[in-house]
Image (cartoon, rainbow, N blue to C red; front, side, top):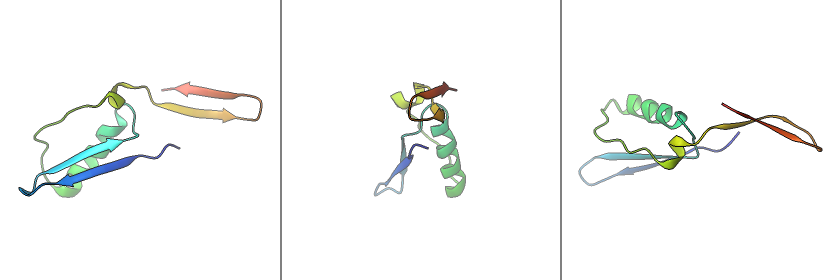
Length: 72
């Protein structure tokens, strides 16, 4: 399973910025929504990165001879 990271910045005005790294497709929005629920705030601005538009890839079977990849 790939590693996902949240890069969180709080500026001097108390504004919080969250950058999700490693989550492809709509998975990143799930992290942002969870973080928003924890803080109890609202999203004022949202910018999608190129990772949002990438297809998540999942390895479904792996052996020494061959690896099969399933795209969601």
